[in-house]
Length: 320
Image (cartoon, rainbow, N blue to C red; front, side):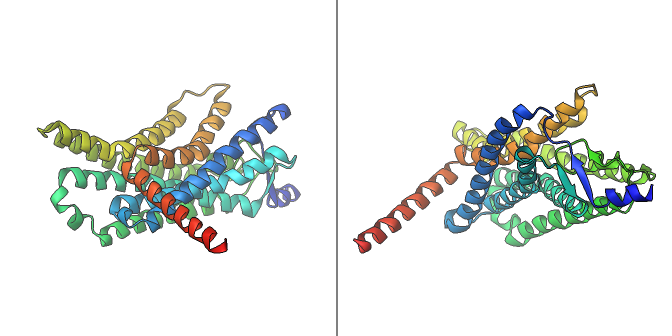
């Protein structure tokens, strides 16, 4: 038993996305494109909000950090998953597994509360437009983001440490394509009651608290919109929060589907597909939603593209 545990402490084996070798190459191509688009989209959004002076507002400050968290948790999972699809080597070291779990948990928890902060920001913008710059001060924005990051770091470290200080069985196959808390807990030979209780309490707390903030904000926004007499004002209010509402529905809808679905013999495959959606597809969709549905972002893209084109033209002229 001691020899088995020594082996387990060195590495785990990830089952991956599929057990069918003929599907690995197509999956690699599809998810490589998705991950590449996600990286380019989120990095582009971060850079755009930093260099364009017209996007220096609280809304885009939060959007920058949302793009950062999207990039963070997709990168914590994506590269390793792509490697396992092209290389017949599904092992992951003990330390890297703990690292992957820590960073993934940290970024996904941060995203939940950043979406809540953005909902509050939209509430203030629509319901208290005259006091918007006063309420959503730079200090408050930084405080909300700092709380989100500090809490997520605390929670991710707590869960990771609680899992990895316990003993594992000799069986070290993780029934997933990345190191997640629940598949790892199933491999523990120690008493798992405490860590399961911690995860349950904090998962419920995170979900309920964030949903209360989001739903409360949008109920007040809806009431404010219904009181508006101008059709143009209503349309402007809807367009102001449309992108964020779309992102919230997609994100929370995916989480609810994953945790509420009935268990069956195919639930493992369904869990994998759902996890793929929120770890890779959602980070790709978010910058698209904010770019395609937002006139300010599209105008900023146009200005930046024109500026870059002019700079390149000047360089070309000088060289000629």
